[in-house]
Length: 359
Ligand code: NCD
Image 1 (cartoon, rainbow, N blue to C red):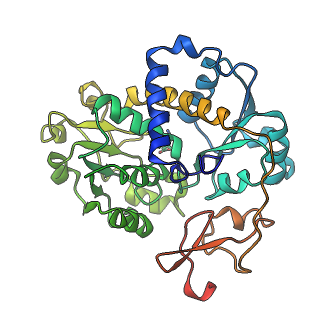
Image 2: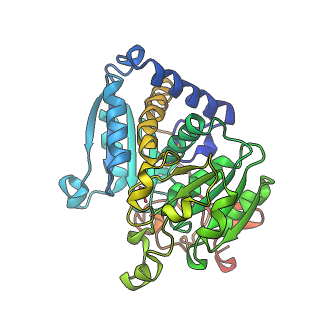
Image 3: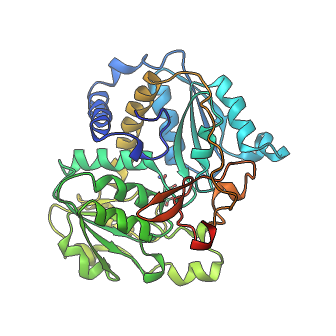
């Protein structure tokens, strides 16, 4: 890997991604060969935000590899409740563990954590930003259910603005040949502009739709997502968006025979329970595929592990990031780091474009 941490799948090449997905396939076929591969290793799961699947599938993955676990799923039961900074928690935990898996409500938190860790760090979701290991799960599910990652028309429906799984998925699927996207959302919850630019730069086509019913017949893969209540300013705003898109039996009648329906879960009300029995619904299988994908990732990262602190970057601006959800606005010791992308100034932690006056 170009970097020893997995913050964004962009940091690994398409060949490396293929290696991990191929390894996941072997592990799924012969799990018994790998039951001691993680022996003597410790993985820490630091979950500052709720999780069922991601946390448990990571933990199950490590246990199935014969490794051990430490960590917390409620920061209130750790020294975080006494006011410990992210940097100190990570610095300490990285002395105990060989691998840290972190989920945090702030965007860019995993990136920030990696600069204070002596061991490799995996991003298990940073606010509404990215979720690369859910994407590994999604890609592995597509390989197993659709048989390909190319030549697909992918409909992505729901909260495309705040859904971190959506962002990581788009960034990865543009790597494969001839994929097209249909973004199905309300105008308020549309895909962020920087991601649309990534789709355009990759030479992929996309269209936007406000109707699941009108779009469903055209697509090969439907990626449903819930409206991300916890990312809304007010309950009023959330209620205005909730319940707009619901996949039900009626809409499934218009869908292709070979459609596959994925969902990172949890589901709220966006897929009717009656769809679960349709053979095109693969979202529960997806949770199991995710465990194998994470087993492969853990092995891959343990192989590339070396206990050391990397040199920390220095601020390249005295301006704070304009995104209030960026980790730099919550952990104030972090250096401000910006890069130029397509002429824009972008925060390295959260990918937010900065206003011109901040340059
Ligand atoms: C997703 C997440 O946490 O971003 N869930 C998951 O990891 N399986 C999706 C969501 O919460 O809506």
